[in-house]
Image: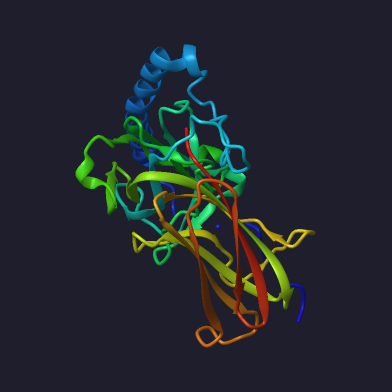
Length: 336
């Protein structure tokens, strides 16, 4: 077997008198697209201007990335001000519909989706890809690979989602805006706490589906995975969820390529920060593992390990799938 790819992460001319008409008609679809794109971006630009007028003196430019890191109070002694706090668990974002001039699959998507909370009101990216690192979505697989949030999204005040996604063309001038939207989650509406929520965000060219949950009195968990022993010739999908909500967040999916290991054996997850209820909440980390060369269904093994939330420190567990073992470490932290 050769080396495997690893996962970390395209007549006749009309009479002269008719040439201008033909050219005008051929340009019209692109002209219409450009006008539609300007309209799609206008409201987003206005919102960003309003944000800058309100917050930039305190928190910097509108495109500033959050400077607050995860799990800041894992190692004791823990100061008195961190606490359990309501937080948003983001499970998935999916392109459920293409509309208007955007009708053909597959599409190569890049851009970003970010969330802003009142911790610093800067962008906490949940999806971020450069044009050169696009993700291909097909009609059968329309879920974006999330690589955030980088820290817990706290629900002290309503939070704002900001979306700017584009579809890559054969050259930059042919790229198209897929979605340019902003919307909020009003965390003041308490009846929504503790259940799986779905937000459909529709624009002229697409509809996006967001799945998330409002967790009350939550803390932060950062998940890390190391290969421990056995065969390294496998692909894996890591997922995580809380015991209270039956919905998985995908941490990494390698599909049919071998899982990349760092020199120290660590596995670089696409995302690794979740929130868990602090009062005896349970975090479940699972792995769907397939040894390379096995039959599609028969070779898939699923194992999971559970962790009871702690206000600080680390918890350790093992995923044993027979032909290999992987160690899971969860760092816990209160919020502030």
